[in-house]
Length: 276
Length: 334
Image (cartoon, rainbow over all chains, first blue to last red):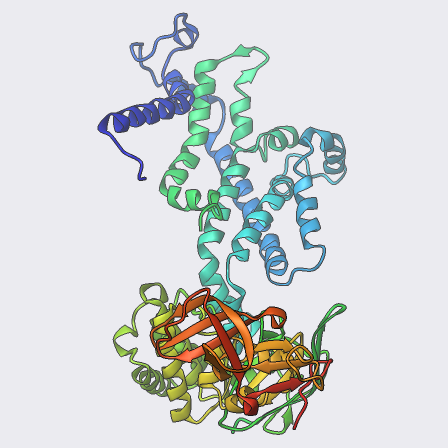
């Protein structure tokens, strides 16, 4: 029997959806609102929602105290660089595991995932010492390398599951049609894999953009991305909630805009394989 | 030309022998069907000929030249896959033209050949569509178009019709046969459907557990099966097997008689039995008869036969159409 959809039911589910959507969105909204309050109002009890003295002085202070553009540029370079590097390594790895699997392929995949099961702090000391000895602390190259390694298992997994869905028959048909491996890649595989590559690239970029543990521990100024920029506002001298909010808003704005425009690709990437 | 010869071809995956010593001579221009139950190695044998798998031993000759070390594209064969395996991001035109493009043919020649292939297969109105905008039958046609446009030495078909519904399958079966006769190109066709094998083939190869059980024309296989397996596999409904001594033929371990060669009567001589189920198809009646120690026998009668479950009947086999088998399953020739 088909499920009956009464108008009451529609109203209830729509209301619930809006409610939960609002609850999920509330922290971000609150952060944006706080960024326009004075420090005093940011602490006010009971908190004010919309009726407060709107000001942009926090943004001015933040801009004056630290160089947003410098950190944003670092974020772009570190997130972009680590993503591209990860793709460069992951594509051939995922190809070979998807199309020429060996007996141990499953084990390798699991082993790669297992590296994500340990908290990062567990390897902080050795990594820190290696970085110190090789002069990689507070360098963009160092951050690119660590973020790339950190996200590589996820990137390979995503690409692997994506490539797995490409029927082997099509590649064999191309081989029968006389395509060399290079032409098979250019004319058949890549065009078919573009949606998967795009969503993997986007997700990895966002993960790298928001990564805070390694960026906070391994960079201070020269290579510091926006995560360090935000953290610098929760300083020993006291919490500056309004300024912290202004910094956070500035930091997440680019990624939210990117996410907004690419949400279709993202959703497809995240739910890939769930439904055929 | 498209003469394909297999000499002592073997294929194993690890310790498992998929193909055991296959010897076969496929004549130029003939339509050869590989048939057998699933897992018998028929698709593997086809893929070995295509070059998509490497042989573990033996030789594959195409027009007298050993091709075991030749990559698939250089063997001059084209293949139609069960899943069609069309390139989803290319139009029908792009799909059919792909092989020619890879071969580096000049553009006008590609155009001409694609148009001709499309016309042969009634695909002209769909040339600019993507595969996802086509029906199953049309996709199948595109896959065939991709195969014929390259003018190969032979076509290899890997269960190409099994994804189509029953009515379309019968129609495509006819079209593929007609097309092959018209082009005169050698075709090797894999199927698990013995009706497809019987209707399409010039010669049938019956495979079982990696072994070629028999190679011959459809009628040969039907009338003179080499062993129990072929006898049971070819023909529908299946041949009846009864123990030789129980049937009064102590010389043979097993006696085989096809349902259509069992005469059935309400009285008389032969094997007595009781009808347990009668299937009335209109054109035929299938009677399933419980015949004591002979077991369950199937009889096929032409037209309507007014017998029903519970009726006592006598079955008499046509003595000229009896098949006698040894203990090891091989046929006893008279």
